[in-house]
Figure (cartoon, rainbow, N blue to C red):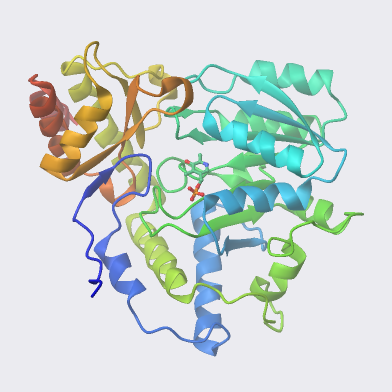
Length: 386
Ligand SMILES: *Cc1c(COP(=O)(O)O)cnc(C)c1O
């Protein structure tokens, strides 16, 4: 007979999924109810309000898409981009490349603005592109580039888009809950995130939000959205306010319990406290990594606290070390992607996994695997100075 699956107990310090808070796993296991049950409808209203809190927006078109972050990305593009539309896409890692794919599959034309992997998006280059292409209808960029650990200036980039009457489409998959995301303050138009990074929830849900301007664009479309599942007009009949909840698709009921719990955890901690915790643990980890002779690839002022990319020392096989951490310490860290494959490790400190204990554990494991010392001591010194 095939046996039930019991996963090994890991510490997840890669690029996602991150360790899920046990409170959230417990919520997930509560009894399933109907997705149109009045009790579930009440829960949906709560989830919407909590997402507005997490995104810092008052937009009524704020909801969880029933699919992972990649579907949230797709939802933004298919609803806002029509055939023939020109979109400026800033790329400084893997995910900007996916945005380009999305624009092209919507029949649009992507104008690429490239920055080095590990660097933030350069607002000057974006401004030049907006000036050169005044007909661009949108600017798309990644706030927290998980493939490198670089943080871009979302406020400045959204402002540039607004000044050029372009919509802004912002990937906040890795930023939400880990660093400031201020959708209304930035004036961002379409923002998507994911549950499995700094919300420390199970993978498979994508919170999204659309501004008034974006909603206007959707209402004025001349072509029907090519995706039935992600068409916001249809989805809103299910998630919208004061609507007669109509059946659109069966919501992943238990995953919504989990997201609800994750957002309550964030609300209890407070946004600023969550960001400060991520930053403090990052400072300790970064100091420890540097003490081990590992270099962070992102310039100091643009580092994401929740994703730390460090160079693999010469003569070290990065895959062997990762495997050793997994086998001996049950610790997962991430590999490099694209041009960084084989050259870096990506160490995540996301959500529930961003803890004092994990920082020291990871540094200790790396000390053992690399046969070096001083990382744990350095991180402890940082903690006692904070
Ligand atoms: C993880 C990630 C995604 C994709 O999310 P999935 O849930 O894996 O589909 C998109 N953008 C960024 C920046 C990410 O880190």
